[in-house]
Image 1: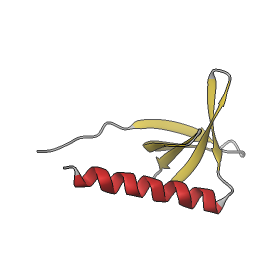
Image 2: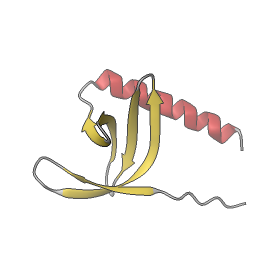
Image 3: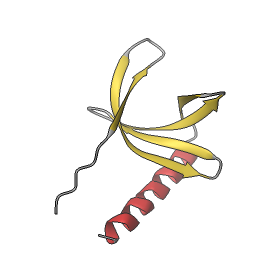
Image 4: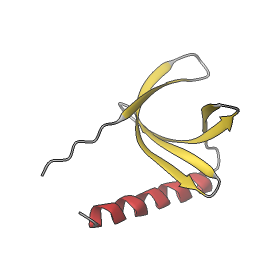
Length: 85
């Protein structure tokens, strides 16, 4: 049986005004925080989702320990999901 995943795509504009398109590979909720795992042509990026009123923004994660913790949790979740198949 084949499974096709529909991906959401977003365009991110960096500080220099350069725009790049990413697919949303995963949304991770940990405690009160939400993170987005994004995949571009040549890179995978983990960003924090921040709410401001009715809007949401993606911001970089400067804390390497925080990023490692989130990625570890994501890997465990994906491994657990693949075992259910």
